[in-house]
Amino acid sequence: MSFINSSVTNGVGEIVLDRPKALNALDQSMIDDLYELLQQWGDDDAVETVLVTSANPRAFCAGGDIRAIRDHVLAGETAAVTRYFSSEYRLNQLIAEYPKPYIALIDGAAMGGGLGISVHGELRVVTENALIAMPETAIGFFPDVGATYFLPRLPEGVGLWLGLTGARLRGADAVAVGLATHFVPSDQLATVAGAIRSGAPLGEALADHREPVTSDLPLAKIAGYFQPGCTAASIVGGLRGDVGDAWAEDTLALLDAASPTSLAVTAALLEAGGQSTLEQCLERELHAAEQITRYPDFAEGVRAVLVDKDRNPSFIPPTLDGVDGALVSRIALS
Ligand code: QUE
Image (cartoon, rainbow, N blue to C red; front, side, top):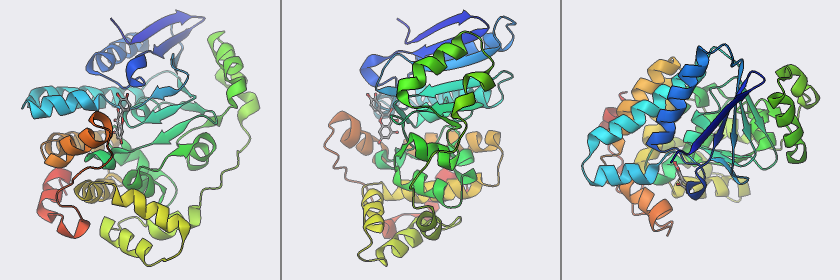
């Protein structure tokens, strides 16, 4: 049973993600299959372009197989945890260095690991149904899959805002900040996909979709509150000072739902990632993933969000002022 379908026609290698019961969340077999297929296609003259799509109309890819990772952690199977993250991050690096055009069509949720198999590629086409986020701080984890590389390179403050709060972007906003490259209305996506599959040059298939799209993200506010190098505590302090501002209150609510230790680790990793190569970032992320999954916030966060779905985790410590700075440094290697 494979959750990846592939075909090659007209010089286009197409990968269709098809794990319907888990919104295409990437399990170990999907990561292994994707890596092997992409490596093969890299050297295959019959493949000029790689197209990644989803069989699920609601999701591109919801993330990683975080439930299975939690089970491994609780069973003390640390080798399986290391194997999962190291093969996922190796796949992210392969996509970033891919020798051929790599294009993802995102018409639904693309979160966490779903961004890892799209953002590093050359082209990301989104529709108004795209929902893009790095939501890991809510589960006691941190934005990985190369996010410590790509988030610090977004417009001022945006990466820190996305990584700490897990805020969800719609397609037009994803284009506005650079996480996506093209916006196509969902009712035209089949036409664009058909043109790509017929082997049309990508510039031609996407020619009608190059004009800027409108986004009403509050970029000035984001830049004001989420300045590079800020600690999570100083950001929360700034937001709390803005009493009565609805955006500041919504943002505080997101930060309040996150693991305080994850917030501190995320701020440290994004700060370091801004000065590092993707390869260095992924190496640092692997260490951080191995470490942070051993602390109770991870199993508890996954329990609250994905297993019991009560969305009421008991994180330890419960607030940022109790976070152990030495522990954060050990996880984030900073
Ligand atoms: C943070 C995450 C993930 C998440 C929710 C978070 C994640 C992930 C899923 C997910 C969602 C639906 C599924 C599934 C997994 O949710 O990585 O199997 O059916 O995969 O707040 O990092």
